[in-house]
Image (cartoon, rainbow, N blue to C red):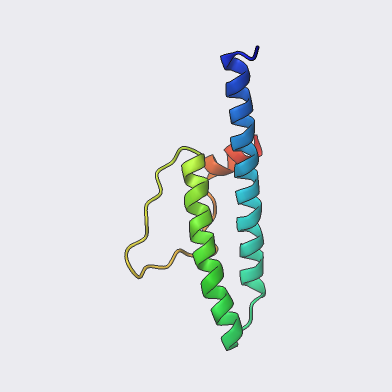
Length: 93
């Protein structure tokens, strides 16, 4: 029979994998944003990627145990904003 330590270990492993997945997806989005041009199609893709990035960042912060401060209405999340070192450290462990 699995004990509480086994459950905690499995849960932490699951959370760590999910954090790693989110970090990788955010990194891909950041790379894609840097590749986009100035045409209308790129601007549409840029807006959609920024929305997706904001949602992924919120999920990442919540998984890592931080409180997500929603930007003010109409505010943009900087697409190149670095992940906090605490979140990155958690993802790398």
